Amino acid sequence: MFLPCLVVAEETTLDVGRGVAVVDVHARLRSKDGGGCSIDLGASLLAREEGRGPPELIVWRADLDGTPFHVGGSMGKVALELPHGGKLRVRALLRGERFIAAPMATDPERRIVSSKSSTSAASSTFRVRASSVWRSHAVFGVARWIDVGTPIVALVDPTRDREPMTLFETITAAEPSVIVVDAGPLLGGAPEAKTPETRAGDLALGGARALSVLLTDLPLSVATAPDTAAVIARLRETALASLAAASSDDPLLAAVGQRLATALVTGFARCARGPEIVISPRFPALPRALEGSGVLEDDEAGCPRVHELFVANHPTLAIDREATAALAEAAVASVAERPVIGRLSRVKATGEKAPGSRQSLRRSTRRGLLVILLFALAGAVVAYATRERARG
Image (tube, rainbow, N blue to C red; front, top):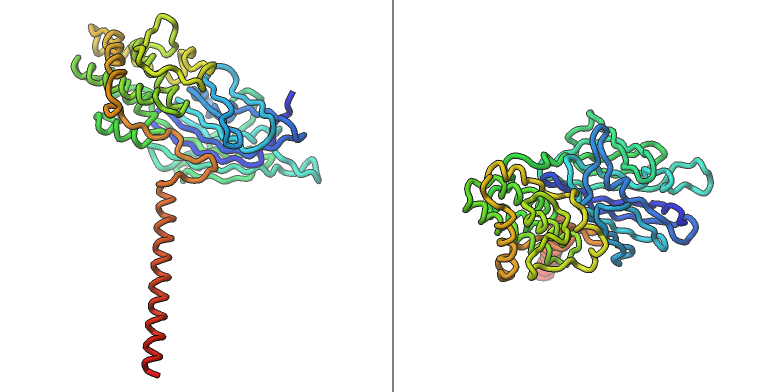
């Protein structure tokens, strides 16, 4: 049996959308004995605020030293046994009302202690960058460790409301600080992205905005459509989006596309795909990376349950029949008709910003301005020297 991995450093990106979140964790791990070690991911990924339930885990993947290591769904433990320490990257898609960026090193077993003294303070570090479509500030609190396999509980500090969504802390024996980000209502009312154009724009942006469209805005747009013609048009839009997601080379996005397709043909009543549920034969098959993950067996996590809302608004329309037809039509549509869906996780495996990000553009701009300034300075020096020689 492997000993718990020690966490040297963690860096978490928490991207929160409308009732959903994309979590990207980079961690440097060390083995206690130089061999294999185990890490419990669910405690921090499913961290919950005191008095609330944990978020739903839809699908997650782990890379070890830049190599794909594991892909899992919501069923079973969210834990890994690693052959050695190293650089672990974990990406996860969640659904809920509030999300918490909490360090794995909240577990005292994960903390690195100085060899000089068994009572020395831990030296693990924890860095968080959060973003939200709802607001630009967060609530802070502290994390309380409960037990292995149990979500970490966060106690919110009401005096630390509306602070910038960044955090850097050295994990000590005390309860570490956490960021709590609100995600708005899970379902209800009209969708935030109200037109096909705004939905397409959010899909292209990727991240939590794209996930919000796939799991919240599109199902709600169908359920709240004003008439039958609008329902059919929005079902086709949703079918094309599920096809585009299911065709992705990212297993996380592909899992969302597969589950959305199941939700469509069941009238948004469920997401588990039994043998009685038939998707168009032209629809992409489940990627090999997702086999055994349980993403097609789980009926609950992340499923856009708007069936009752749809029935209340359109009691005579057979949504399952119309949705099946929309999926079959989408499966034979041209690639150009599919929406463009950006990456759900927009951070490189190294933890650096992807090319084209605002930070990269700002750095490039500063370098360009510096080069121009140096050339101008050199030109002024040459001109001055030339004038002096001419005077002499």
